[in-house]
Length: 140
Image (cartoon, rainbow, N blue to C red):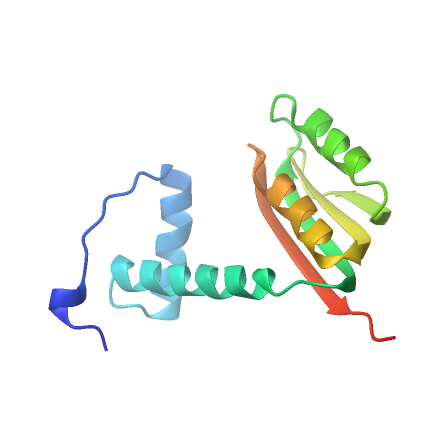
């Protein structure tokens, strides 16, 4: 349990549609406040970041990505990044979720640091909603 004196107050700006979705989730999950939901989300983000930091050695995996295909220059940027990482990308599958949103699944194999770098570069692009890298270590 966190003591009141250990808390720091921050301010954030969010688009209304993102806040509405977040509010819906925290209400469904029974959080007592937005703050508690945000704390939980930050803990989850930190855990995921730490897990991603352990991606080392020879790995086989998948990157799943959801993005807005109408975002200006996004498709070109995604293609350029994938071409730069052609040595670790083995296959990809593209699916249209809606008129504006696409799902891409990318099969990868290589050094964990390279796979992580690829996922993080895709994650940083404007218009990309989510990127998740899942890998397994290759035992020899």
